[in-house]
Length: 443
Ligand code: HEM
Image (cartoon, rainbow, N blue to C red; front, side):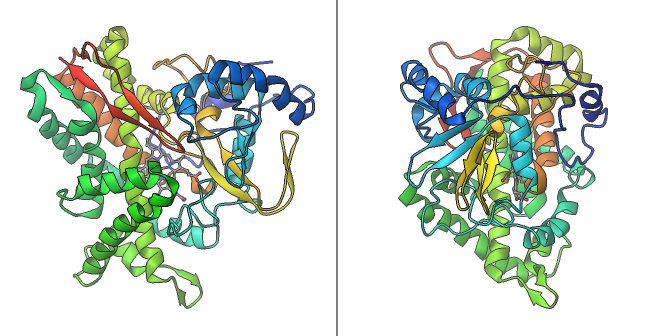
């Protein structure tokens, strides 16, 4: 198997990292899979081995919410990539998990066969309001993205840079003299929310903690409790959108959302969909970037050589940010529903089957990334699927990159030397998203 990146791949990660790219991945050239044996046989063959190693047969009996998956995340992803292109889950009504880069890419790009309109999570709890644009397909999805994208383009978000850096410093000021901090509560869970609330939504940040908690519980609480937690987030943001609708326009993203889009000529979308757009953006804006920040700082705290290299060569920051997003993916996997019978890597899926796109795995696929398990901030080419693939590709990726770059640069300026506090270590929670719960740093 040829693991070398092709010339075409090298070109994709161009000098201009902030260019709005349609996709972060490209088709590997000249790559041919070996003849694949029966996928059921592969799953069966390795099932026992997985059970012995991880306490659960992650190939035939996968559960994204099983703590054993989160505790062994990267070894399990690598096993899936090597041995099991499509894993099976029997949890609830069951689902498939597709891991290899080429398969994830194919599914992400084929929204007609793999629809988002029935939700992004497996066994979607009853009563959970739908999130737009995430849980919709074209043409509704296109109508929304067309009006939302300009507000989050590289150029649009660049004007928030100074404010984000000032906020990073305000947060650092609060703990720097103490010589230690709990990074998540004192910085990581705050900065992305501040960046989004102050700059994009134009609201005060007083209620941010409540929204962060609502989104967290809506994602990780027992399934039957999730709708109530998300319900509170809908209520809060619905009130804000109503308030803004009745205010003079500011020409911002919120005005665009409040004005709505037409789903058909002359047919304006319902008000609930506009609130849902605001919720989805807030969800994306506060639930993801924190993990990349925290996991990267943990890595830098434990790898002084890499930290020094970044301080000595600030020009390497863009590549470092991209590599950190690749290796510390906050979105582990999101799903689609098959609209017809289809075959993926030899596995037959029926109409109505739910399939998870294992974004976290596909960013580590040796078929497209050289030495994928190695964290290398000097990579010439950083190909990953951490921001998704196809029409649903992350709308907030430019803002996320800006927040990450500002955080690392301002942090290293003020706190170039730091370590994990003795006797502590990071703690995580993992499901469709991965979050770090605590990180104690000393400096
Ligand atoms: C490092 C940070 C982030 C990562 C890794 C990330 C990852 C992703 C991924 C994988 C998707 C694709 C979903 C799918 O395939 O169904 C996505 C979509 C989305 N993201 Fe992000 N995201 C990040 C930051 C943000 C931010 C800062 C915002 C808001 C400003 C945001 C808002 C959204 C929204 C609204 C969607 C749905 C887009 C659609 O369905 O068209 N994300 N994100």
